[in-house]
Length: 55
Image (tube, rainbow, N blue to C red):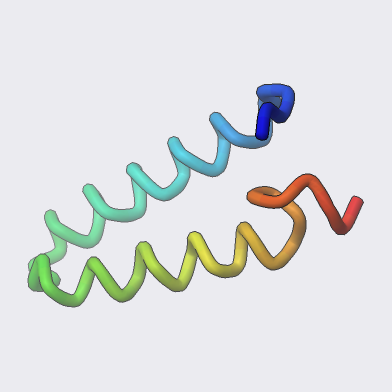
């Protein structure tokens, strides 16, 4: 299933990466970050980022 690459995909990836790095510097345990990233990915997918729906 090919879908066009959109700038919002890059923005979401960079925002997640910056959030993880920031939380690591604040002393959050890496195991907890897995839950944070999973939650962010789920929200992104729910709003149409991952499926091409919901626009």
